Length: 471
Image (cartoon, rainbow, N blue to C red; front, side, top):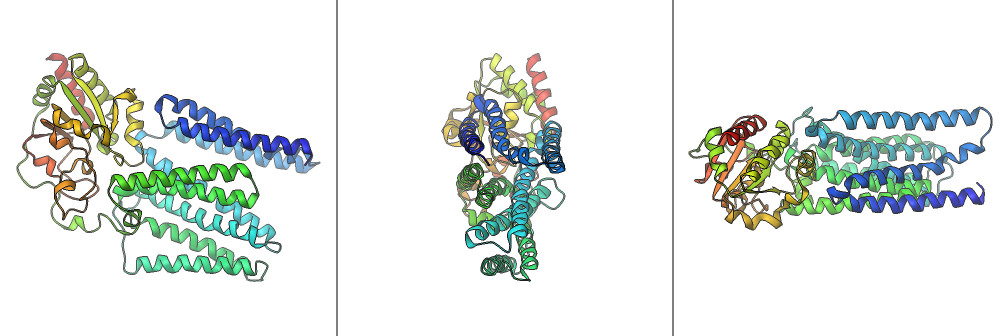
């Protein structure tokens, strides 16, 4: 590579890294998120551009073959990305995010495997260590993300899958992977090294699956953010394998941001990461008793609910996964607009773990053109419920369960919740009395100031909006 080409490559990598950092900052606000996506696309183009330079120096058929492979791969990836992004339903967005996390891990694993096969007779410790880190982290990320995808897609049970000796088995696999990796670092060119490497890949893939299947559906947002962090770590290791600065920088950004987000979400549930990963949350509570809250329930019809809302001066909407399932975000926005015309103040309370991925509710409400300044985090709005006329719960469950505050025997005790029960009136829209993913009764449903409106959230909200128009 000439000096000019070297300067061009490093310049592209530096510019790409800076743009990735800028886009990550802009993704923190819906006002700049669209711009951030375009900046990320530009950064990716700059990061890929230097990879085409060596092709220009090849001759004969090699030039054509390399270009076909590179451009063909880019075309295939672009097609898959465009089709999946345009066709995916908003309710399936968590699955797609998990799937793409897994693809990142798989890519790192494949690159590391190719480098090992090509250089196993020449590997020093400085090259071998990042290769094996890419394999282990990338493999765990790939199958772990696939397990999360299958749970969210309901291809396998969303309940924790537990068996005797599970944690010991995971520990043995981890120690086995480390042992094999150390052996390969010491004698990378041994006759058995290729088979040992295949075994290392198999251990990493099995470990990723076994680590995630004990985790219940309610904890999938944490798993997705953690796997996102793993994919970043794998990319960083791959950057050291390929000696590519932009991969190292971008991998560090993704890995660090994923860990920070994971910590935020664990704190929002008042649980440690170890408890999420190894606690089997939800496995025992479902056997505790029949589904549904205990006590008399005050059921209300659409007309009664609309009458209560028409008299309200302040309303706080609490969206949950049920809103996503019913695709009711546009109906929520329509109802809120009618209430605002009548002089009511409408705001939205967003719990950090509502939905099935970080920011799930924000994405849905943004799709419905809900102004971002109407969305408030738990800490910002929780004290306002005491002076609110109506707390409108749309498909949320565990994040509004008062048991988290008062019942020390509850598995969600200590988890910060939205104080919907403290509003003057609480209106809960649900299909049935079935519990949420935590599998426990919700005391809010039988509270004196709560009215339950049963039915599909989208249809119910539309009927309530029609009743408000006639009022």
